Length: 341
Ligand SMILES: [Zn+2]
Image 1: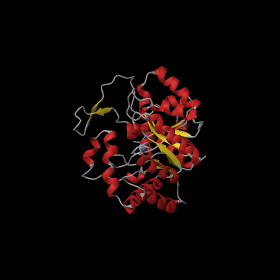
Image 2: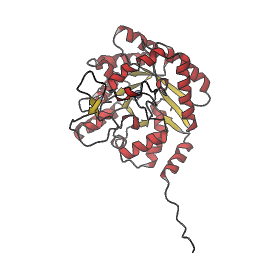
Image 3: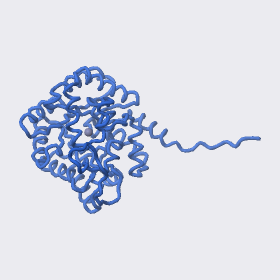
Image 4: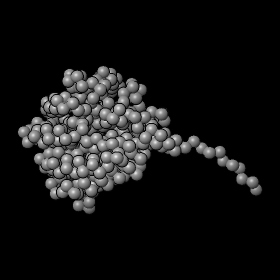
């Protein structure tokens, strides 16, 4: 019997990957390569800690890592990116009183080794904040090394404005862009993106500032989001989404203060997935890039740094099927976010 020939189906993954390749390759706008590939049997149980507990739990690793350990992790990460055809990469590195300048030294070696293969932009992670004297000293040193000055207002809780003013003043003085982790806890109690847009205008840094994550935006009602998008546009603020890193952020601290653990939040909110509302932002003409964030560490033990997985999670959780825009998110938007265009 003669078999009927099946017409070839539309392979969207194949066409998106082809277009990304034509545009020079993926842009991974956000990672923490100095802490990637650090998961061990010993620290795996910490994966269930709340985000704010993890900020402290990584101290032991930072203290005991040598420059060569950090270099090896970063090199492994860069090789993983190159194997996928990543053309440009943004990586935070820790610079604070615990790790001191070890990541800076490793990062410089990585930059020298891979300068012909990939464009790398560094940002300084400020897990100890920027306000207390010792933290500020390391922040200043980190800011002078990196390409993009960074902030983490949640780390200086109650002093978020002061934290951002220090970050903005430093970046202005150094003529650098700014990347800030904002709205990470998926709750309408957070309004950090709002504050970042306000500070961007106040410091006249329009078009030079990027908010990372913005998970809490979708937990707010529609009227708030509409107003926020207008503010984001006015400030020329760009945003980064790291889909698999945050899709699980539906939890809160356990009520038992002595327990490392989290439980589901019972907070009421408009129905939403735990992700930056990329569909709404793009409809407003706001630039969105994509990143992997943490890879194989206590923050994200199962994340492997695969760019297609990230894009797939984004398009599925936002039900966003505009292929052209998805290719832009993976390429040109990323270059804008990293200040490479
Ligand atoms: Zn991050």
